[in-house]
Length: 320
Image 1 (tube, one colour):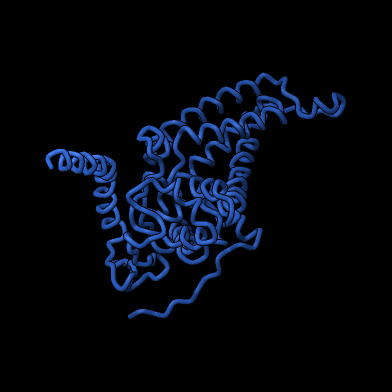
Image 2 (cartoon, helix red, strand yellow; image 1 turned 90 degrees about the horizontal axis):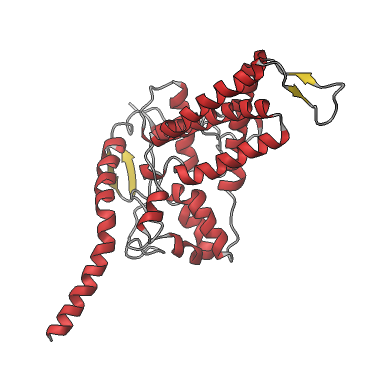
């Protein structure tokens, strides 16, 4: 009898050990949700008490979830479960919840999959400044020419005066890359019978749509971001002279930092009504809670206009 009680106690402690990993996060998340949504849960919908009277555009609506009857076990890491959802995955992942999620069993890997928002400017802004200064000095030497790999007769000199234009080109190209990745990669619909593609979609972007208020998963963690950033750097170095490609890359890197900061602010900031960021936030709220297959621009709506994926304005009844 004593041995049975000991075994039961050990099993209970094992379960509590996993559950305790989420305890601090859940408490932080709860206070964060209250602070930013100031919401009340009524009849399965979460509405903002401060915006309900005046601002329907900023009102996130979430369905009530019976955690014990959901399609996944929320007390276990989700990544290994979502692949089994099959045809139910797409509908499930676009039903947002107001709680943090855990992806991995390993505490180390789980930690690497999350980050704080300020890690982005701390890590990438110094690199951007260093590259900008370094490649500006290279351009200033006056021996950089474009198209030399094709022809020497018609090559184009690239003096330091071209630096601002190349840098701004990088910013513009990033805004396009941001749109294309969000639309065609992050919002691809994985095949219902592909366990691993569903997992891939969930870890890339599905997790964010499932838990849009999990602040630890709003900006790209440094490790996976480093791999993507390195890819773009190598790609530009291969197709352009070093100083030209490096300058374009530096502009794109600043664009990425701006994108991640704006994305975080759209979820947790309170922009003034009528401002540029206010309109972006209203646009992004609609993307998350109503129109997941449109409104792919985060830092700008320019490419949504260009590719006709802009979320149309919806008239709201005037509230007294």
